Amino acid sequence: MYFLYIENYLNQTTKEQKKDFFNFLIEKSFVPSNQKIILSDKSLILEFDKNQNFETVKEVIKSYFKKNQKIRITQISKILKNEKKLILIFNNKDKKEIVL
Image 1 (cartoon, helix red, strand yellow):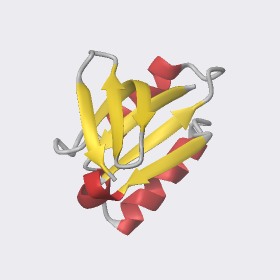
Image 2: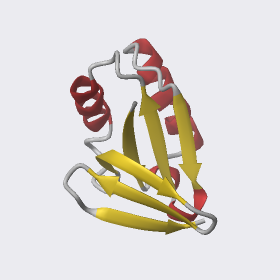
Image 3: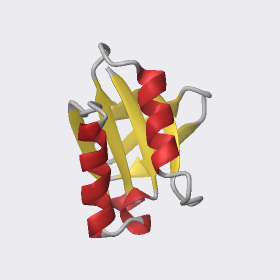
Image 4: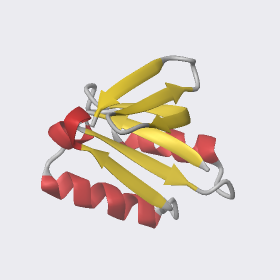
């Protein structure tokens, strides 16, 4: 599985833009196998199957949001979860802890 972290997704997109984004993914045949909305972080995590070319998926999603500089897209290499925190470890070895 591959994971993409879309930072500021919730507070930087309207309801209509959210709907358009998922329609866009479906049109491109990049349907996530799972999604997780992180309310405390105002972000979205999308999970994709390994049978999809992840670099292509990531670049297409980045191009979709390129006009909005506040939305950042990053690949997640590992997700750790305990009772109080979600820990995201990114491909560039950065780490983010999100209180749940």
